[in-house]
Length: 352
Length: 109
Image (cartoon, rainbow over all chains, first blue to last red; front, side, top):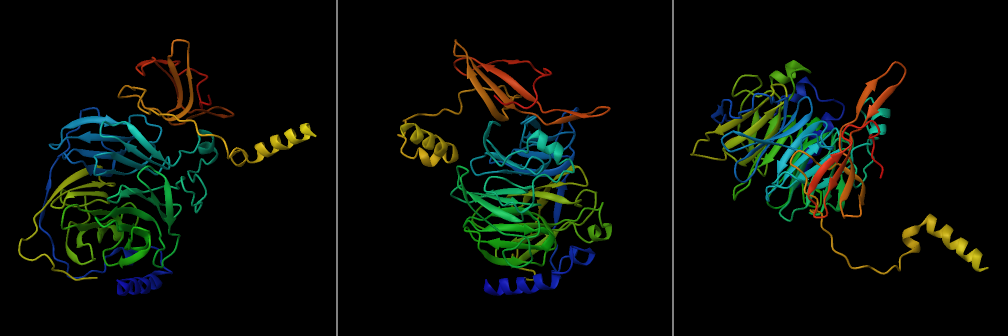
């Protein structure tokens, strides 16, 4: 583990001067085996008057229901059943919805949204009622005075106030972890009742430092996997938010997911939107399947807008590690992905 | 002298009310956060105000909506979407009062 950190620090040093760039967007991992897969076309069935906007968040519950969080005319949260039939909208017109960033479902089937427009993390019970909120939407008058959209000052590091938060995860005790985010470059830990425990991280490129923690997930031991997007690496922190390992060969982690079950996998999407540097986007788009120790099992997909191609994957659901859901920003959709891993060997591919 | 002391206490209480009242006895109590039964399409936002009437009906004034700005000729006008909801004494939703009324902007109490 220490070796991992040293390697990570070295890589971070090399990257210090460079912003995420054309060169950096390409994953360093070489000769990664391709995992065969299929995409289920038009899985989600929308009512005629409801359209998906940017596919920002997707998550499933224990029954296989699919929750989709989208930036459309308003930011909206939709529920579909396990066959893709539309069930309902949750939180229509909610005060905490302005600019979607992530939706996750906890082990008790509560639905959590992270909204980077209102700076709020919101917990809904399975019936769709709000049962907890963390953070606070800036008051309307403040919003107007900050009309540039900058909101509160970065690096304020307040216990119960976020600055464009990005994602939420839980450990087995129900402790809550929030990646925060575009402004403050930290991870905040709360107990299951939403009481602040600690926060860690600041802007930088060293171990434990972050540049845009864009996504996070927890494993069964309570380790936290943070998509340190602009540093082009996944950081693993322990349950007390101390750095443990760095995986820096799989590109810019826009989305991470850790599957449940006895053998857990880490999925990482190397995403770059094509409306920016389209050359960078063209050489990304793939999703990596990894062991929790960073060993790459394989990869699948590439940039593009066709079925089986990925157009800036923003969130991955991996409740079933062979049946994924991915939401995409620059191709307003959610794809259901069926992986067909070869049964023979599971540890092919280059370790970090 | 006594008066001076009272004044000092008052000043003290203003400056650090929690410290000044650290020996206040705890009052035993229960809480029920599920009393109010909201329709599926109505959600509370920030709960700015709550009051009951003589029948026990509960009135909740909430900051529930996004801010909308209207650009006027010389000023920008905004409306922040506050709503006033009425429930009966058992928490059953009865009605919304003043939906869209001109005076509802950013609920205070």
